[in-house]
Amino acid sequence: MAESATAQATGPGTPAPVAEATGISKRFGATVALRGARIAVTPGESHALVGRNGAGKSTLVSILTGIQQPDAGTLRFSGEPAPAFGDIDAWRSRVACVYQRSTIIGELTVAENLFLNRQSAGAVQPIRWKQLRRRAEELLGEYGVAVDPAARARDLTVEQRQFVEIARALSFGARFIILDEPTAKLDARGIDRLFGKLSDLQRQGVAFLFISHHLQEVYDLCTTVTVYRDAAHILTAPVAELGRQALVEAMTGESAHTVTATTDRPAAVRAEGTELLALDGLTLPDVCEDVSLSVRSGEVVGLAGAAASGNVQVGEAIAGLHRARTGRIAVGGRAVRTGSVPSALTAGVGLVPEDRHLQGLVNNRSVAENATLTVTDQLGPFGTVLPARTKVFARRMIRDLDIKTPGAATPVSALSGGNQQKVVVARALATDPHVLVAIRPTNGVDVKSKEFLLGRIRQVADGGRAALIVSDELDDLRVCDRVVVMFHGRVVAEFDRGWKDDDLVAAIEGVSGDMPPATASPASAVPASTGADEHGR
Image (cartoon, rainbow, N blue to C red; front, side, top):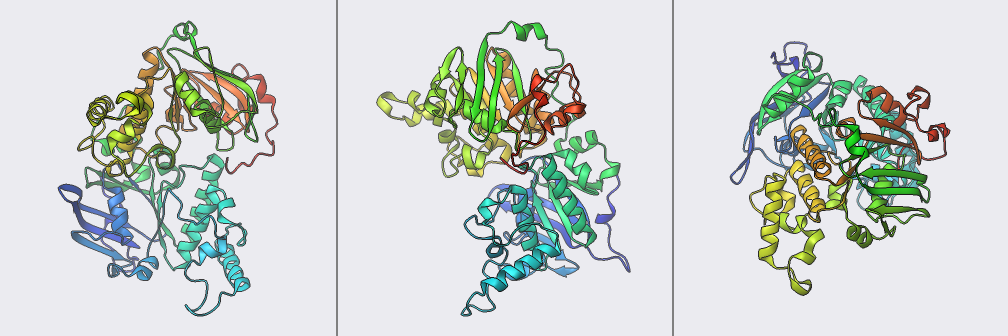
């Protein structure tokens, strides 16, 4: 396959790439993180960087932003050599990264975040707050960011925080911005607005390196894609010339295929199963109202919805994380006390939380400790935890979940994103739950890990248990026998297998007029506007 024009040498009159890395190699001890890698991003370009977890993307980003030094290779910005290592101001003027986890400080105002450590003209000069807010307002206005400079950052939506981070990066003079999984916590409307803003900035000459595991977004936003695999550059090509199967094959090194386990699953098998999860009239304050749902043994059910739908909180409530105002949750016919994690665990609920970094992992602890947190009472007598039992239990889960790790004692922070997620899933399965609740289980993982994790959830149901996948990612929902859709706190539709993408997306987005009459529930008559915040939960 031909290389993209972005990789070609620049000729007379051709602007130099805003960022160009060639022959980049990096080792961490015995681990080869990058091997002769390269990439070139041209002015005004939206360039995707994709690859499985562990392919070398994060290491390249750390080198492009001056956090790490390469062992070999050269790095240039707009034709000039990269700044000296440690010259923070010089690096900021050339490149910025908007990470999946926001670096905005919630207790500060938008203006303070925009000009952090630059609030006044000198170290001993007082801060002129009115002038600072005016500067912030001018900066935000220049890039069309509709945010109040005096607002506390903690009160902003995810989308607004990202816009503030982009504006802050541009204020240093950078015209090359790396976006690391920027859409992970945005709903469809937020993604559309983000992409619209990026397109506006591209017309101003700003270039973006877009890192995402959602391949559809690569086709929606980017003109060029670079694929890394096993620490090396595999290909760079125009997106329009690279088919989806070819892209997945380049990422995995194997023939692409998708999970289709549900397409031939008899409906009669599901109908005869025992009801393992029942929600009856569940109402969570300011989140959802009168939600009813049933999942039987042998069944995987999807609970779909955009960010403001309340589907995530419903999933968390099943696991005891939220107290209901009214309604009932039962597992295997046994009532679960809402707002009580111990009650949910005792009843047989396993949870894969939405954010493995904030809710799922203790980063300074080992793989073994993280994987066995839910079963410590089984690892020794009288409340003690025996290291030998922990190690045996953890090794079994490492084998069952195919977790790539040097050993059970390895810190979980040293694992790739996909393997960290497998540890979270292993912990949820350690109790052999009756009901597995998996909230956005493939968020931020590569194609191969995504396929494995969804297959593992399918196995839970095939083994006679039940699974609820809470997600707005269509690939997650394809493994489900049924998909229940929420919109602004209410159940609005239900789809059996074989649904069409546009029908399901229409229901998720509240476009009830486009839903098939046979599959839409009576709740679909709920007005599209309920006063809920469409930007976030």
